[in-house]
Amino acid sequence: MVPSDPISTACRRRLADDQRSRWLWALGSCLPPVLLWHGISRRTALPAVFGLTSLAALAFALATLVGFEPGGSGHDDLVPEQQVPPLVVLGAAAAFALGHKQGQEKAARDGRRWLELDR
Image (cartoon, rainbow, N blue to C red; front, side, top):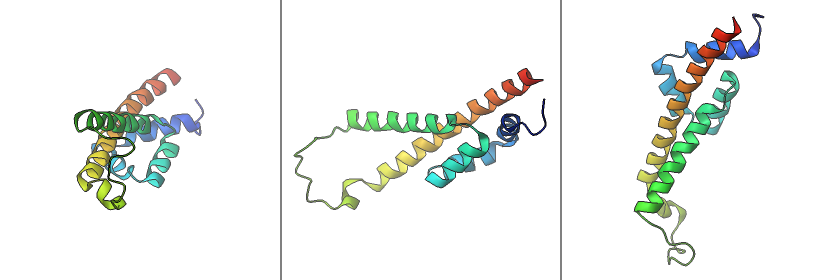
């Protein structure tokens, strides 16, 4: 194994993150630059995919349970701030963060497996 192998280095970074830093990454990754930096530095898109999947599940649940009226709903005169309630925005950020955290856990397990096979 080459010590400067970028994949091994990224796997070690994934494993070096403790629970607190994983939560910080998950919360910070709601911002695109932090999400991009995390993906590049850990060489994985898995947490972002898990976060988007969680966000899609929330959107599906909201559309199914709350419902929506496409097209002429009569809400065209509302300003954008009134169209999306702040609670929905916070819920979306929380859903993405939870999914991202689960993706980090899976990426760490995959990294551990990669390092064991690379020996």
